[in-house]
Length: 359
Image 1 (spheres, helix red, strand yellow):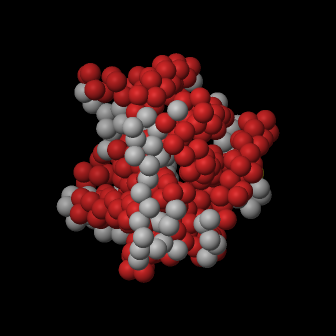
Image 2 (spheres, rainbow, N blue to C red):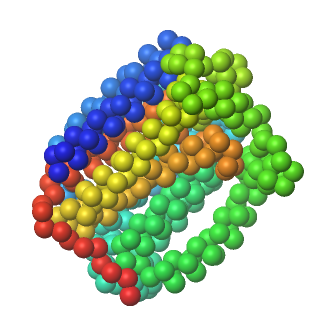
């Protein structure tokens, strides 16, 4: 297990270092300095949370999820409108995005509820309804910010965690069916998400790129060739590619390190997920199993969705590339998440505890 945790730390540090170089290349010294101290907080968070026994979170998960709900409500009521959305709380030294923290705290509380309900998780009224309440409450509060992409990630990862935890597929399938109808209505309700979906469908029907962002992103990826132009040699990040340090940093990566570099990065995220699965399998209790799976699945899902958007195979979203993109809350929360995953691995025993089988 020491080898796994060391490998996880090595991959995490490599991604953080690479992201810092890419941000410097894309946006220059000022944003690079701003990013560095957020990276420092993220690494401190990783160290601190890797030393806190993860079992302690079980006793406080209810308070954590209530705290997340309060933060999201405060965001809706008092946050300034930035680019048509109210998602950030200005703490002067950092713009804090509660939805990023809410994702982690929700995963934690779902894991606790699945463990507490035991076999009742297969029963809708006596078990499943409890995690569903918190899932839909958090999803709704994020959705109306509006932040459609993050709300969909929360919903998707939560339902996968419920399935892994033993919930019946027939229950989840029926709920997903109903949620999809309301989710589709919500997407069409908000102008920005409606525009993204319509332009994406039009690109599939008529060909061409989804929008100018994706067009420039594809040019960046294509111009990198197999080995790339070299670190700091990106041309698309100068005026052409919007948000090259954040929403489209994968494109800058492809231009500077080429196909080989993008493939290596995706393999690194897949490695984080596989290490998370091994840690989950060896965890000493079901809570640890589910929490380890939830964290690793959230990381790999965010990474591949970000890459998919950059390649134009999904509608444009604001999903960051974990541990690489610029963004204070995102990199800090992912750092803390990796720290928790490391702690689960460090406390694992050789005895395996199997997650409850579905009936």
